[in-house]
Image (cartoon, rainbow, N blue to C red; front, side, top):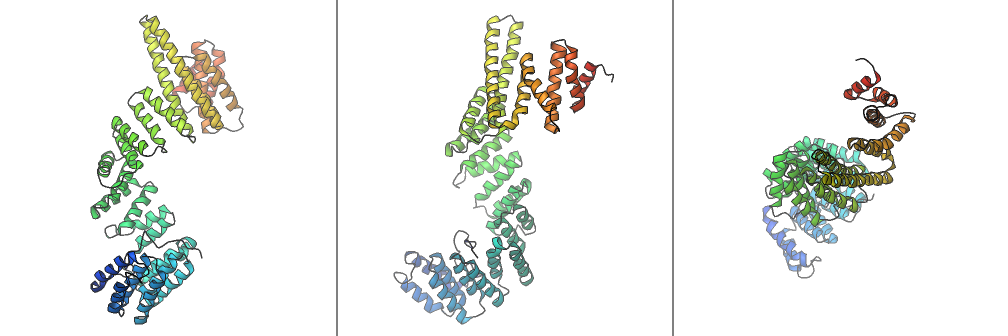
Length: 488
């Protein structure tokens, strides 16, 4: 079987196979480890240190496995196997020695051979949990059922071992966050190892269980206060769960920590500030994020959103344009956001022009009408780009153009967009909910224009009938009944 490096979580920890190291050789094997860093063969500068250690501890199986794990860290697999064989000479049932042999095969990417040695460990040393967990790791990808079966066997043979956490780890490594979260939820979070806590929090985050993820992260921070990575995980869950105070608190602790910062850290800090309606500070942090990684163009749209919240439509427009220009994969909703910026500017100019007209300020009226027209044309251009890129949005774009034209009192223009849309939808054999919405809402606008603006009730009636047939909005239906002369 083809097995990847399923066992090496970063690097082997010295003596990781053994549950507890005997204190008499810990410092000695650490000295050997330092020597082997400069001489992995153990035949040069490290020769004397290896010779002295082996002479002193060759009758101690645990000490020899510790030396073997030291050889593993410098990828001297031949000597690691030799250490395992020395340990087995003294104790043929010493499971850690078989595990050491399996670890060597795992690092050589021979999953079948690794599994065989881990199986030997289980047979000779059934109370040693590491044989089971390593064997389970081998089968994690190729045979998940076998992987789970062996962990259940571990539960029977070593009932005190934190098997639920191991199950959670297995599911996490397999990419099944839902099962990982379920298994981890059964484990004791107060005794769970540090790396598994991180996986538990990430599985909560990936499955949208942000409140639980935040609670677990808080416990992890309490247990491992020096691991600032848990601040990041707490921030992620707090921001996604819209926990305003926690989001800002953990974000600021993370930003002020000695942990190396990522672009996403500043993005999440900015999002936390957005949740707290601190838009100017959010813009500052989005800009920091973008300066660190200008490929994350979503930060440009987020800046536009923040400026929109501040009522600064000019800046919102500027950054929305930057976003669309930088992102060939922009979504339809993001085109709509920019179009809405132009519509809002056209609406503001339209209202200002009406006020200027009442005040008899002709010069202002003229310039404001020009401003309205300019921004309206920009909005239309964005809708054109949207339909060109995503043809399935044609009805949506037609409705938006018609409805917004109606709001801007551009009645004839509204009809040019809405009437073809209504006719196209009515010609369909079956209508979905979106069709019914565009049909009824577009028909309401058309009917109102013909009835109220053009004083042509007969032309309005078919469209008001569409409203009665398809609308879910009672206010629209009430006006349609009035136009059709239907008594309430």
